[in-house]
Image (cartoon, rainbow, N blue to C red; front, side):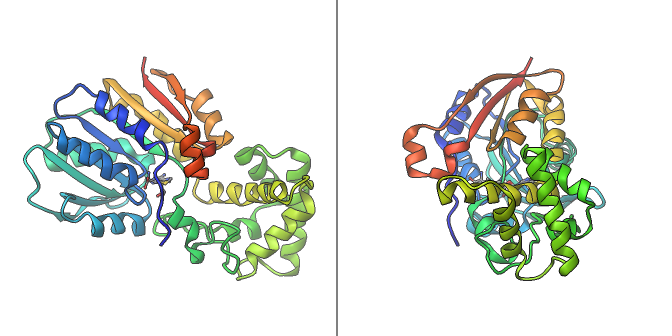
Length: 329
Ligand SMILES: C[S@@+](CC[C@H](N)C(=O)[O-])C[C@H]1O[C@@H](n2cnc3c(N)ncnc32)[C@H](O)[C@@H]1O
């Protein structure tokens, strides 16, 4: 499995060391394969202690972290709105430091947090640091059967990050959305100019009438359509980038990524301590726009930090990252 390199790890850890609380509460809402969480937990152990709650809606990722860090993880929960919080595992744990992992959607962060606090009878009720490292991880992208990217050349377009919760797959959207809905999907999620979004939607409609999507050639067919409709750039890399926009827009729609981000932001003033901080690492304009324009009342942007040139050289995937440092106003 391809390893995921955590983005802006040093910058995140700097914020952990800045926390003045003796036993801080930290919530990482995008555990992924544990790149940030494991280091945050190490830091808490070296300090006086604290509580780390890490959430991800990808069960494979949560299980992977659980297997690799079994010695460290004190609690494993699952959360769904239908079934509430369920404890899957509990260890004796340490005295001053605890790491709990949750399989669940961060859109429900406020409920997840209050249920965990209630279940563990935790004394502290507010969060000192929230971390969200948005998007997908390298192992998710690489997993061909999930059809997240054009690299998975022989997969049907599924793209669900949490197949337990979401029923609709990307190919369902391609088959059943009207031409107008498809056009809006491309415009709203990735800011595609309406001329191109309309042509894409039209070509998808023509193509699905020949044969519905939902087969192993989905990725190739969508790539062909993207190449036909989207303007040629000088380098082949330029055009490839435009095709990735189509995949990104579909993934965002299937997983309701912007809605979940809006929900997370709405919850921040209710869960953060008065001097608490939220670090949101975001990778594209759809996310940047929501953070910059749709912050709820009571939250403000302190600064926006970008990766160092050295990090981008080592990990080109970090190049579009922006870390928004948010606090209560
Ligand atoms: C970029 S990865 C995080 C990588 C992690 N920070 C690391 O360094 O290993 C983003 C993760 O967020 C998760 N994710 C995205 N949207 C989510 C949501 N609404 N609720 C919970 N997890 C989500 C994805 O499943 C993915 O594992």
